[in-house]
Image (cartoon, rainbow, N blue to C red; front, side, top):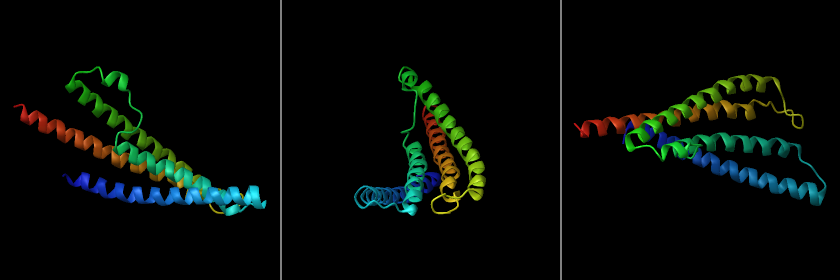
Amino acid sequence: MPAVSRFADALERILNQLLAWLSLTLLAALVVQVVNRYILGLAWPFLQFLIPFSFVWITMLGSAVAVRHKLHFDVDLISSRLPPRAREVFGGIMSATVLLGGLLIAWTGVGFAGLGFLKKDSATDIPMIYTYASILVGGVLIVLLALERVLVQVARQGAQGEATR
């Protein structure tokens, strides 16, 4: 197994743990919020920060994991009709496109991170950088895991090319 795949495996294990904890946190916060608001008539300002924080981080981290497993949007209408070699090339193009999309998300995330230093949550006065940083981090993770896909595809195509000689 190439070193890049071992790195991606370790990164994915960490991301899966983070996603599990964030999901549990989100679920617990939602339950407490509903009980407090509709049964007790209370609202906890920190939960109004924690719920969207957890949701955005789950979305961005989960997107990166989905990229690694090719669970992202793909134009199956085209690829299913291509011959095997063209399908591999098309897959490489799609992986490169996802990588470029991750770069765009990361680049946009830099601007959001800068804005996060300026804005604060209205209910808790917590800086929004903690939430907005998810866009930058998610974009970087998408790039890393899409890059792994591209490298694995290139290595596989190189190995197939040598085997046919």
